[in-house]
Image 1 (spheres, rainbow, N blue to C red):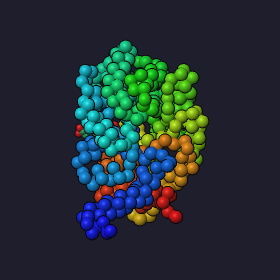
Image 2: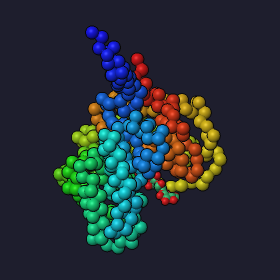
Image 3: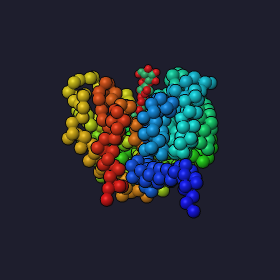
Image 4: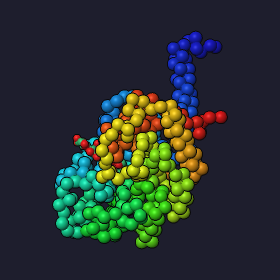
Length: 373
Ligand code: G3I
């Protein structure tokens, strides 16, 4: 009996469903970053408020299709989430966590202890006890609220100077170097299931890397839980140093922790001061020659960017057993902090998606490493 004659509409529906399931599965497998790299490491992006609130449907579709990990670019920083001693703004952070859960993404918390973007009241604190109370209440309240919902926390962010010594900050000045251990212990207690990371820029470079290794070893020697290190990855197509990156992956993983690349982007713009990294306090005067690709990115630079991303991802794949996650610092070029740093109002092109939210040559290059026959 031809059952389809009797139940033709049902049969067509089933056939359509089967085909579309097969097609979308096939498409996901070959045409998104998260699917292509699913056996290797998580692929993440940093979300701004507009993404968390799903304001732009094209961006929303792209984020869900390409990424399986998210980091809040700004909204969990203490200045925004904890503006006055007794007031917390949880609204956006709640929505961020809900967004990650709803879309089955790996949810990163960024960041609990950072010298920058502190609430104004912290600058007025005069004594160690009050700094300790602020840090303790902040970690207990924020990490505690999302316990079981955040997969990993950047517990301490950017605690090191370029020479590997500890950066002067309100935390170091008032509490001494033990503040790092205190912060990790508080985070472990507030959210026992979250992975805990130390996160910093330029720690692939030898002197700063040495400082990071010492910091991590001290935590481990005192029995403090630390699960990973986040190498931010704010690099340049001109000065990228693959050897430093590879040495760092190897040396950090020898400590028995995971390595994540937490804020990856590649500036394509000139940088006469050879400024590497991300000290947000450094800013330079605007000048037209420092903004050469105001209207469009020439093909040659587009190709150079793609080649550099290829080099980086080849290296990441070589060490896939040591790497937990690679997160881009932004969704598309329009949304990158590098349009405003170290010089305001420039047009930069550091990510894999362009301003129209279309994939760039660099996107195809990263995908091809996994999908090209
Ligand atoms: O929210 C205010 C807004 O009210 C005000 O009108 C506007 C005027 O400038 O500023 C807005 O705040 C800005 C904030 O981003 C949110 O957009 C700050 O000025 C701006 O300095 C801040 O920059 C962020 C920077 O961290 C400092 O927190 C960047 O977006 C963010 O990409 C960057 O991210 C850091 C990581 O957290 C840590 N590693 C380095 C990385 C790059 O600096």
